[in-house]
Length: 124
Image 1 (cartoon, rainbow, N blue to C red):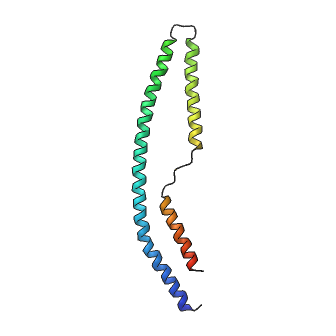
Image 2: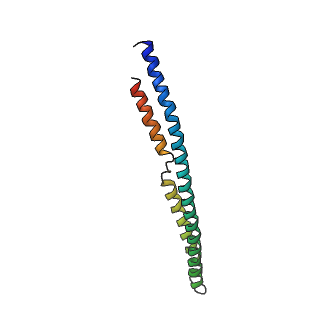
Image 3: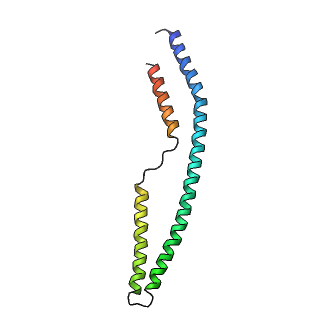
């Protein structure tokens, strides 16, 4: 292969990369905006769910304890409620650790990988 052909090929690769950089920047800004919107929506829903759930569960626990107030099972009920909350915390921690983290910018990564594959193929 001549020097001229190699230079031409590398010039074409360079042109391709320069053209794709603008596409990457547009794709990056779109994905960041989409990720931000999704994150705000999910966090808002999660906070609302957590607050409502905690209030509901707190009042249920108070009702259970108040029901057993002047019975011989009072201390058992109180410790049972505490143990149930401990169990909920442990299960929540295990579920949280078992989850796969969300993939951000996956479209941009896929585009870059496909372009790198195309470049490798063109340079063979």
